[in-house]
Length: 348
Image (cartoon, rainbow, N blue to C red; front, side):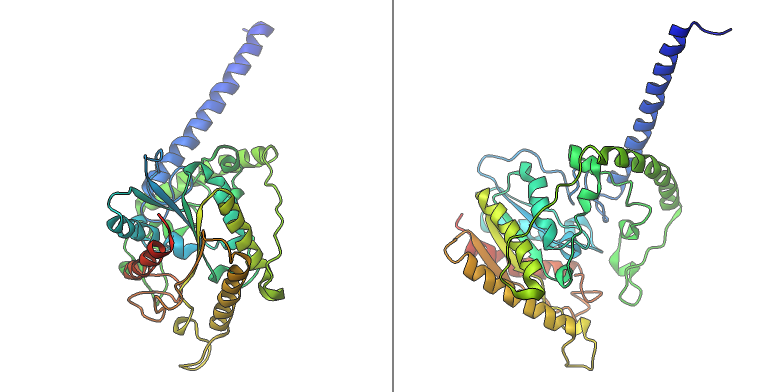
């Protein structure tokens, strides 16, 4: 029997709402599960940064955010084995009366261009200081801002993990020592991983549709770079650093611009003892950038340059497993060198 047109209309609306609600519930459930499943091995929390969700700031707390690429993020190690995670207890031990939190805002392949976006996105964390850790990902013009690929994140601050699960093998890494294959991190999926990926693929298709629609409502704003004063090769990099530094200063934050360990033996292209082009680029890049900071911010006591270039030998397999990314011990060693430099420079 055919329903009256009014009831048909009501039925249609209810059916759409129920269908949409069920779809949203499915995607949300899968996404929250994946956040939980991969939180420690290589993922990020629901707000898009690595480690535990940081709550409201405590009275007297000093909060530091660390920005950078995969080395800051901690590719190949667990969330509590990264540089920021190792740095926090070292700073805390030196200042036991002051609650200290170090938040890991790094992400794979991001360079200095992303720093301003990241600082703005996480203003609500109310940091007292920002560590800008860069170098490797800025040998060429790098405009990646991973979180801004998600319109959901731009609109709400929630970063879905569904889009990266089918592609990101590093999420399943649980033991770096057991996954190394000729200095490469490898992944051998188990049944649970395969089942998870299948559910993620379904959720991914739905999420992508939502992202496309929402992206029209929250476009990513364009940005301009200040002059970097670093010459044609490095002006883009220096301009990106300046843009981030200026923003942090406007928020009355301390800024630590930190050079990553120099790419030395592990990235050599020639015979033993010879420098590769990458090594030369890195040293030149960081020297010119540090000189720019010294000139532009010569009267600004809140800006500090720290050179971690010699801190870790990237040719030592106990400290670095692929020429770029640090092992657990490498991260500890880097934090061990960085902590006293921050304590010395920062007027608490």
